[in-house]
Length: 441
Image 1 (cartoon, rainbow, N blue to C red):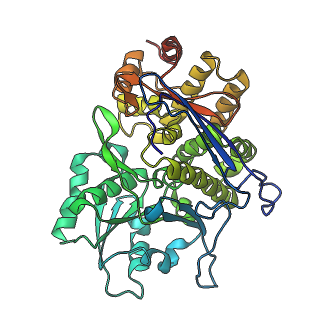
Image 2 (image 1 turned 180 degrees about the vertical axis):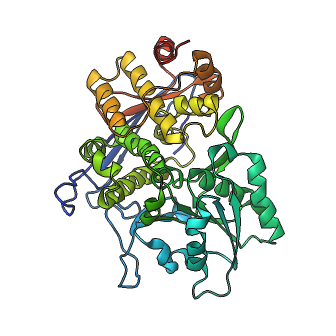
Image 3 (image 1 turned 60 degrees about the horizontal axis):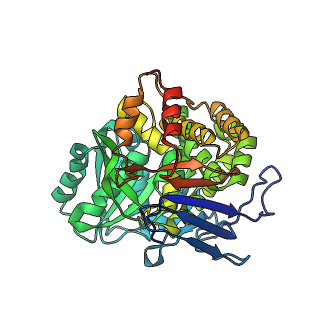
C-alpha cells in the first residue's frame, strides 16, 4: 500500500472472543473493517480505501492461538503471523520456548549461526540459546559476539564489531544471525544482517517487553546518529520472532514499565477495547501477572502485525505506530542516548502529542485525563526532562524521519479513543503552545 499523503485517518472495529477468562474481556479478533481516509496538499492524494474482511478471518494474522506440533509435555506457543506474502513469518509467543529447540532450528539456514547479544543478556540466556540451536543438530556451529549494553552504544562503531566477528568467522550467505536481547540488539543485529554480504537470514529473540511488543516485529533495523535517533537503517524482515515470556523474569522493573509505553500506544491509536483492558489491568501488568503480560504481548503483536502487513515500509498507515515518538526521539537525542529509556521518552512524548491534539480541538478533555492517569499508574514520565528547551525540541524534530519536503508530520489523536491521524496539516501555533507548556524556555 503506497501513500505519501499528509493526512491519515484510521478507524477500526473488533469482535469479542468468548474463550478468555471473565476478567479478560477485551475484543480479541482482528478488525473486521479498516477504513483509511487521506487528504493532502503537495502530496499524492490517497483518496479513500476500504478493506473488508469476513467474520471468519484469515489466520495469516492470528488473533486466536494456533498450534504447532510439539512435544505434548510442553505447551504449544501462540502464533501471530506477519503477512507479507513470500516474506511472511511467525511470531511465537509462550512460556519456555527457548527449551523447544525445534522452533529455532526450523528457521536456521545453513550450518553457521552468529548470536548477537550484550553483556547483560549473555550470562543469562546465551548458553540456553546455543543449546536450542545445536541440540540434536551437530552440523550447526554457533559463534557469538557480545556487545556493550545500552542505547548509547547503538552506533556505527559498535555495529562494526558484528561485521568483524562475522568476517573473522568466515560466515557465508547461508548463515543465520540471531538477535538475543532488547530493542537495541534487535535493531543492530537486523541492520547487520541486512548489510552483511548484502543480506543474510536472521531471527529475533526479544528479551524485554519493549522488544517483544514492538521493536522485534516489522523489520525496522538501524542505528542512531548523534544528530538523530534511528536515522541510519533498513527495512529487513526476520525469519521469525521467538518471544519466550520467561525471559521477563530477569527484566528490571524500570525496563518493564518502559515497554508498557508501547502497549499503551496501541490502545490509543487503534484499539480502544485494548486500552480499556489496560485501564482495568495495569496493576496486574506492573505485578508481572503472567496471564496479563501474555495477553498484552499477544494483542500488541496482533496490532503491529496488522499494520505492518498493510504498510511494510511506512508510507502512511505504519507511521501511526509512532505516536509520541517524534517528541520522544527529540528527548532521547537532546537529553543524551540512554539517559532515559526509550519507553520513558515515548511516554512523555505521548502526553505532549495528546496535549497538542486537545489544543487543536481534535479530542476532548476526558482522553487527556485518561492518558495522563494510565501513564502515572504505570510509573512513566508525563513531562520531558527539565533541561529540554523549545529550541532543542525544534532542532531535533527538524531532522525527524517523518519530515517530508521540509514539513514536519505528526501522529495525533483525533476523534473518539482509538483513532489517530498522520498529518502535516495542523495549526503550527498548537505545536508552539505545546512546546512552550512543557519547556521552561
